[in-house]
Length: 218
DNA sequence: ACCCAGGTGGCCC
DNA sequence: GGGCCACATGGG
Image 1 (cartoon, rainbow, N blue to C red):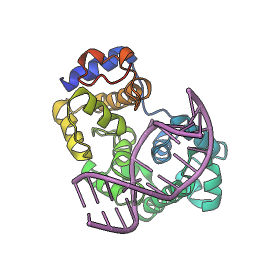
Image 2: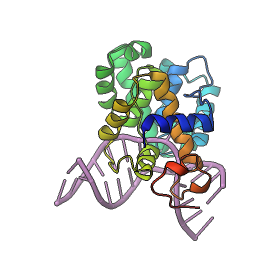
Image 3: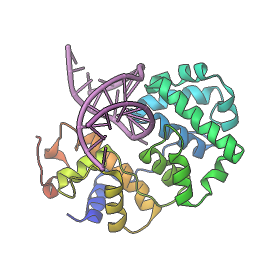
Image 4: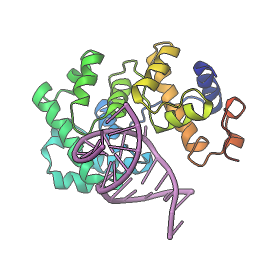
């Protein structure tokens, strides 16, 4: 099964996704915050947390870094894991102010290699979160791998590997290095995962059904 | 009463 | 490198 064909099928089925969804005039910062808050959490819950921050004008690095950890915990509570995530947000902000004078654009302008390395040095930002920030906020072509990507690859018979770098390289080697393609494809895989390629799969209605090697579910 | 969600780090081997 | 665990709210 050719990877680009998978993209075409998903794209035809689900249409344009227009990720990353943002609601404010400060989308890059909102993407970073959302990327951390959405770790292992439904976007619906993240939206509530972001609304809480937005309503207090806290979707700005300077403002968010100035509030107490305990207050931040309360505001992001709906997104779950709120104590660890509050620390993770603070870790990011501390890094941003110490190294880039609080200037997110400046951080995002760094070369991809360095940007990724620096993001990964922050406790609470792993590979998927770092790559989401690089792709959707810095808008540089890097492929984001998530749990749905592993599952889809396994079921399509593309690879059984659960190694992030291995799967990321596979996609980047097979696809044109196009940030807009990478943005859409990742969003489409999430949509596929939420609707069909779930833990309890709904293969009967899945757009990839005829291409799938492991049709497990109804 | 379960199961799941746009992961990560710590600890262990 | 991989396996297991804690972290937590809210929806199906």
